[in-house]
Image 1 (spheres, rainbow, N blue to C red):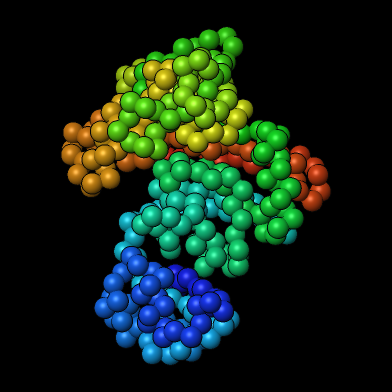
Image 2 (cartoon, rainbow, N blue to C red):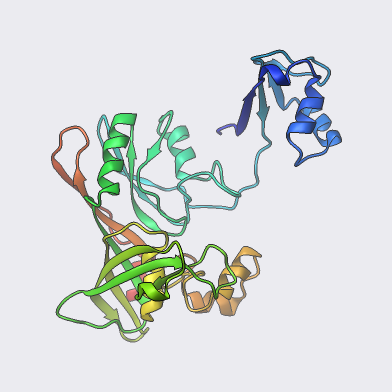
Length: 319
């Protein structure tokens, strides 16, 4: 298990005071008595030795706080390694599994699993998927490979293909459906992080950014009123595919934020989804899957393509 910890290097102007005084004044999210209890629980190290609250701090002392373990929500840790060489690691990430630590998640993240199970000292995840999105995650093993891969993503030179199951009978048109517009905050939503797709720049709020995605229907499950689509994002905006599909009237199955009712997201956050809510969602996760990536290898320069099959739970929706 990876130890969660944070450290601080004592600066000259911070020296000369007792350690307990320093942490009580610097880290005010706990009171002095709580920090005293953390010291008694042996959670602080000073220059690699157990710290005492009455120790007078000196310049360049290193103080380390060994954070208590989080009680983290369960996740699916069964990731699959699809490709590995000296520079790249390609993962098929399951859902739900966060890519990076944040909020209630630390050890239950792909980043932590790669450190602990795959021996990577510093996993550099190039593309990030939402916790409830499955599929391809590109991991660089060194700074040079990370930089060269990130440049390709930034310059839109990476071909990305997603598979997504949506509510409704999506149009089966000869040409892909082009959704070009702007992505900005949704002023009508009770959820601060929710975005909205605006087809007209004049309607978009300040700070909105260009967004472009093409969609193509692959198949339908008419008895369930569902469609399987291929989505190709040409820009890399936050929640781009999900927000665009909601605007088009075909919300992603299982999507609590951009699905049939955003109140599902609020109830999910409070852990009070009802049986009726689960039935409405159809699936515990959003039905979005990063299926293909095509880019130039950061060292050889040759074109490489990786693919991840549609997960069984998404296939089951269409059966």
